[in-house]
Length: 316
Image 1 (cartoon, rainbow, N blue to C red):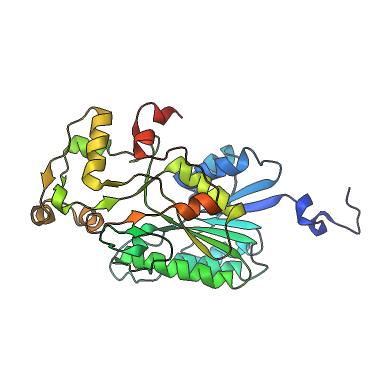
Image 2: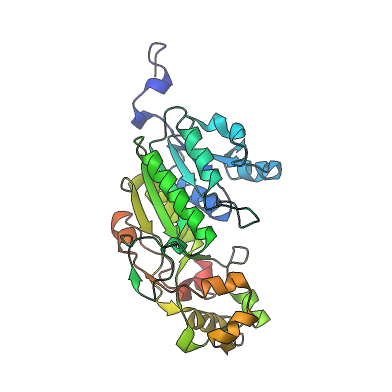
């Protein structure tokens, strides 16, 4: 037992419970908390920043201590300084709007706060594979130079740069680049609604490669990076699927017993589809996940979208 001369806070780290702060604790954050809290409950205390009073009860029910604050109000998050040993940052930048810049003010506010006092030992940031831009269907690993084509992706590049800046303070930063997230128990987490609407996809000659990760595998990757990630390292978090977008929707239609979507050439799609959807159809890349498997030692439970979309796979 610690004496009065050796308070608990001064004990070696191996005897102290690690405090993990979740910044952006939505669907993936809650899944990650489940990964951290179940097998390691004796060594981890989970906390989550929330700007919504309505979410406090849910966080407490999940064994997470809620901390109210808002990344859009930097003064409200100063209490986070020096609070956690490890941080998982999954909060997105502000969405596109009039006057929006290519910067991520939310990540900037968090980095400034974490530097006010002793910074955390490790931080995991959830970025997007959109930072690569269009790669013409080429295989892409983490050494490829970023080339963001949209303001949304440009803000993610800014956030990644801020995390690297924080890493200069001795924080072991892991940047996870994440593609399309899916799961049957996630809101909008499968193509079913889009298939029911009959939304077209591109004709085969114009189609693009797309990448995916099951939400549960992503949560496992976040947890693994918190403990195993190498310093200032970027990791593609993606499954082994190698499909073009139209083939992905055809596969989903077969699994759901629904009609396959109509195919349109690109020149017709530009006038028939929303701009947001067209932006996803303008980028083609095949992500390499070797680093994820070797460095994070992550064995995918859903290596192919077929495994996660099929009725049998959804029960795993």
